[in-house]
Image (cartoon, rainbow over the protein chains, first blue to last red):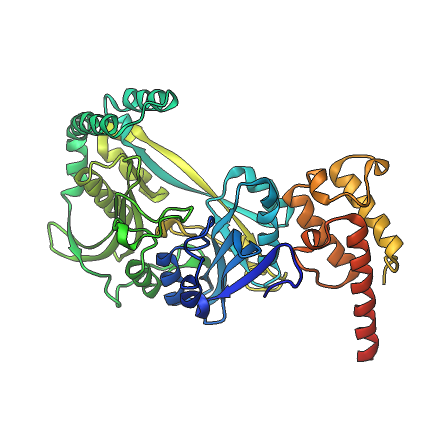
Length: 386
Length: 93
């Protein structure tokens, strides 16, 4: 849809049109690139999407894109019944003064689509904006974060020195390399100190990396009658169509939310209990290193049948954190009691939180009557994709 | 039906809402000055258009304030839309 004779054009790109849209001349090489190839491919194959679902709202002046809002169809499970909702997946407007207000126009355009919307990961500065548009705040969802700077005896000093050098404009490949080598050494010391507690936990389970999540992986019963739902099919789709890559050839260079990382991989694990070889199920982790060299391990979806599933998740996350010398580890809040088994490392965990905003299309639409019953989970939103 | 039947009434409504949103006196607003000059933030701009939709009972383009960038242009455009909507309603009856 384009508003006629408008100084600001609004286009709604449908799922079925995404592939053609990214191949249009000028779309991926303009000043503002509205979507990257990886995301376009993922959106187009989303098992929760229908061909006519809106996928991207693009604001343009003349032929130039000046802002965009991504919409990703997802699922809400209400008393066992799966219903469709939409997540905001990106939201950006050009920083020039002429584009002031474009972000608001994009959100308004999305509200006109008449769909139920949910979003998270927003800049807190935008919270008043969403509250003002009658988005309902949910949460916060609490999760555990381990920052290995707290284990690394030289972690904090390195980080401070890095910031000081950057502020003074001293930033070269040589300095970065020296930092990485020195940090690598001190991190190794930190991990060695943490080894006894980690080994105690990880020793109870065998983790086998497998190529893909089996289609018959059994999900857990939801913890709440209403949850944002990620089926096995959805997780398999996310694994097949990642939004980030460590392959420069696959990335879209000028995309604002860069899709290129030094390291980007999902790890699918088959879990067995060490003592009995009993198969406990499957678990998905992500390992990602950004351009600043910060490595994050996240515990994502789990399909585990055992009672100690939070313990399994923590053990796997710490094992991979050790393997990749990760700087940070994010795991669901339920892992908290098991951190006590880690000895003094448990003191380095901190609770973090995410706020969600939801806006039902109507009071009786899918989200409307259920807002007070939604139980939030760690993978809700676009967290697992980025 | 509400009182926003004429271009003048719409102009008055816009002046009133803008002065509240901008926390400024109505007398300081210039009906021919672009909205951009007033530094209207995103929330105020979207809320203004959504409130207009509620008042008029018609859908308006999210780009309304970009397409009709002054109070006078906006009021004239809305008056036209209002008339068209009324004609369509009559035709359906």
